[in-house]
Length: 434
Image (cartoon, rainbow, N blue to C red; front, side, top):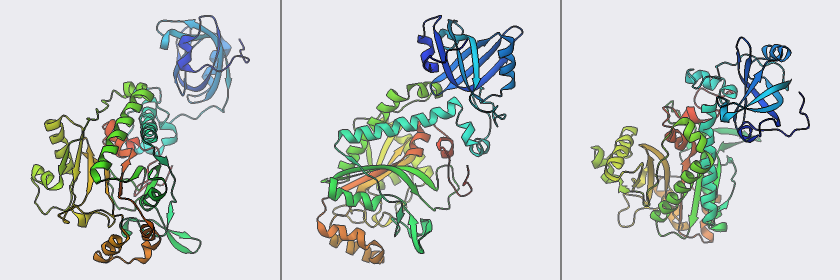
């Protein structure tokens, strides 16, 4: 039968269709199953799966001629069937192919789980991301970004954007991608750090969602050359603890959004969404070294230390989150504010989530003279940072901020072994395609 005048019905809406009513479903052929007297066709769209019952020999032959992943439109009649998804299926179908017959996909997308190795999944990402469990991972990420924005909008932050071509490195000059910018050198931004600080002088509270680039020669399960950074900066703070308090609200908002916007993904992946404590436990860097049994002069926390601290936080505080404050000032960026009374340490922190560094944040310098002094003490020339440092000659409030790595957040949500599992099209030492 033909139902060309019927509006499109999503798979998720089919269970609500009255039996006998006309429906029209559009999507991909997810699976074909031919039995002796009937052929079952499963159609996948953005909302889920719909089952079609095919008995007409001509339509059966048409189904046989179209490979899985062919895009089709199916018109028919909603029919009650307790064994069908949602208790409804489509009978008396008419089928129209909306694409050429699809080539055989590199993996069997109709199977409940994917058994292919990570290289295969990444090499064919444009197709493998169609699998419901793969797609669910990014639905968690998308819901998290929505929650990030909503939480900050509620706190009177302004969303901003910043250039990704920059004239100087934000952090270490050895870790930037140099590009030819109309005959002169420029760099892909390691972060929006300088610009979000400048914009505190305009809006007081700002955030940005965007890509950042790190030319770090790491070939690990936790590093990417390009990732999505969720950046925040706010003015008129007392110290880094005010920044940490905003971070706590943001994480809570992200968790709420995951529950509200991606409940089906949470169920499909069977993940445990963390609870954000009313107050995130905080320890000093020096105490963290003692807990993990590291030497007192250790300049940073190694991945093994982070894992041990994550286990300690869960054991001692029942928390998936732990903030480590007071990192050595010498190991932080030059714009980091020292700890009052003891300038060996900084007013900065890292937030660990399930034993992995997720966030770096802290209080920044805000006086022009302090920037001149910090650059001189580190032997850094002023000229590459001149336009940035100039900002602080014109009155900047005490301020600070943080950045969340979206892929790390999502990876820890699903307990992925490799960050590339939750990155749509990862860029690393070896991968520039797809």
